[in-house]
Length: 346
Image (cartoon, rainbow, N blue to C red):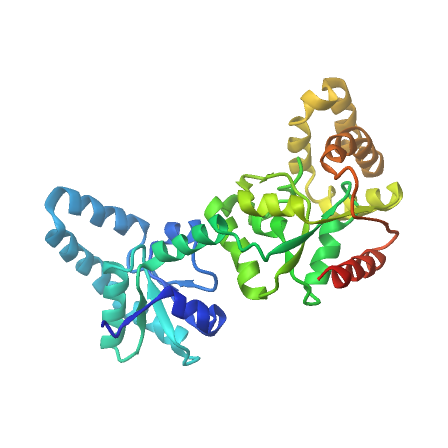
């Protein structure tokens, strides 16, 4: 048995938050998705990786390895220093690459030569990705949802995030997607450009893994959020869950929507998104709405959008007969009522 290899199951059982995890892949591979909590200490950057790959195809594996050595050698002191910083907490340190092959093996060998005891993840990122796929393909029947529906501006997301901060199990789909789940959903979401389907699924899996609970609060969403899609098994279970219809007075919704979307800061982004709904509201109405934005009349702009666009579109997705219907006048009231429903359900 190879004493430097560890299996993914060992890491998950120990707890990812108790382990130093190092991703030896290139920055672009890391950006697409990575094991939660991992830090990126690439053996080769993206350009170097392409250069070695080209050498492998044109000249063969031996020349490619020699090129890799030449590229890595000048960076070795900084490379070791970065591992030294990671190892300061004396936790178990595990390195992975794409398949748990050459890049992670080379990283482990170099770091061990410097006197640090580190391990390699057997199967690399590929084994982790297989675990994620299996998790959603065989979604545990014990998982249940309390699914919260409601019109735009009734503060569903804000209430659920406050409850999550108080240790309630919440599957925050919009946070994982870096998108508010609406036509204007990427406004004030700086992480949105970097989100991928893989990173979304990893973030969602991590919610379940970290919590250990079986009953989760979540927000009723369309299958597609921004540029990612909710795994089918989760989306189906959400629809089967205990349904809560949350509503609030129009004045509350207008005020909250303006606070949430910050039109005074993101006027260009909101204007761009407005142009995407001409086919729903018509050219003339969109021109009127743009005039309201330009004049700073955010209240009227928001009321028109809620009345004429959001409410007619999204009410069709509400359950015909929700298990619970609550009307709120404050975030605190919504949190209290949802907490009571969670406690009585879970």
